[in-house]
Image (cartoon, rainbow, N blue to C red; front, side, top):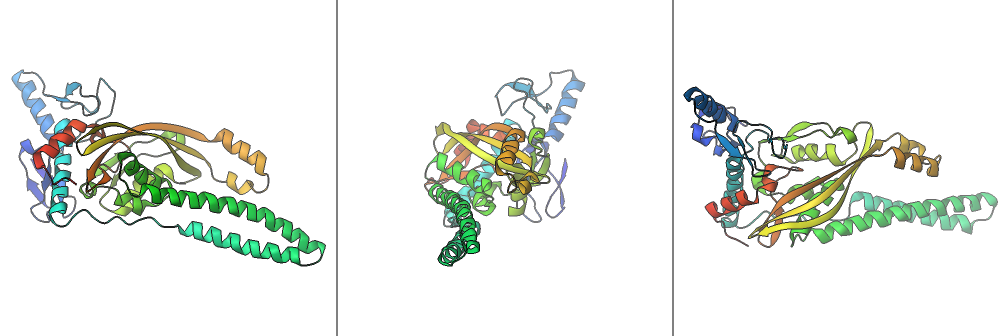
Length: 354
């Protein structure tokens, strides 16, 4: 069958036995996944014509046997995107293991930039300092007007002080997680960076083998106005586009993610699976404009009309050189649940372990 390279548009012939596997373009060396459904459909047609049984595969999510051409598992009801079967998942993970082995052989994994204080934290602290000075000067001056400005300064100082404390606590939390010396810290560093809009830090927690041109599908979540979409993780911009629509303000909605219940549910060798609850909250952002005018009533309205959707997902992590890396850059994928496939891929390539 013929496929086209997504990078240089070169067309090439690949055998049907390569369906679902990762191959390299002979022109530009770009890695790509051969669509699995082409060979599956051909095989199914051939079997039907011969009067034999239709080919089958195992669902990568629940492990049950289903038709190879199925796009939805009849057992667990999970949607199976293109190329999602045990063999395809194993091929993708094997390609990532090969990438790890090459990186270790050439000097080690990429250096991860440590998070620092955000500009928002520094600006808020600077504003609080200016308000403090003005408030002291106002109370030092004589007259009712000066006292009134001093009282307003105290109120502003309280609000800014709370903002500084919250922002500083979040920055220190990210610094603590950045060591990534346990599976939980590895996933917390990844997801907390996304929650705070620090996508470069999150992207650095992702294995380089996942930063490819393969199209990733993000399903819609209507309850919190998250649209569906297709993205490439080959660049930071594509990664940012995938996650920003889930966890950051967009369109007419303020949106945020609340993370909780991190727990390791399985560890074998250099792999671990960590479960986490991601609660996405959304409400119309124009309400924020009314907040200063009527703090308590508007806050109550926001709390009442906020839409919430809690997603429980399990992410697969890989330990290399003492650091835990996120294997897949999506919210949920077949790779994240295919621990056996990951171990099979690791056995095939056997990279140096750290």
